[in-house]
Length: 118
Image 1 (tube, one colour):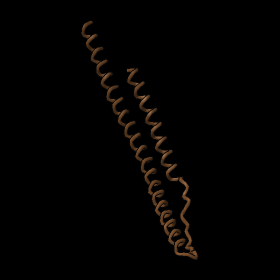
Image 2: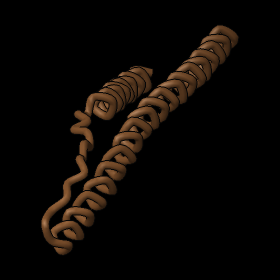
Image 3: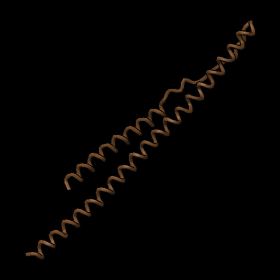
Image 4: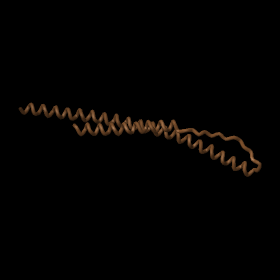
């Protein structure tokens, strides 16, 4: 019975750490700084420079979209970690209570048998 309680406490601590980690990841995902994409239209004297500027601007826009998508992925990962940690904690609580009741029933049966023998 004591080992069962120790295992439950260990699982609870791990789930609490997982939940805290998930909350921190979620907060970090929401608080990632948005540097923003502010691009002005600039024209240069030669066509070559206009093409290079246009390509650079396009690459910067695509990178900003990728960063935004990554931000949402991190927030989703944080929510997933919190959900899994809480689910596993509830599962370990149910397992602990079920096994505790089984041990109590076995103990009661042994006590009844010892009383019948006397």
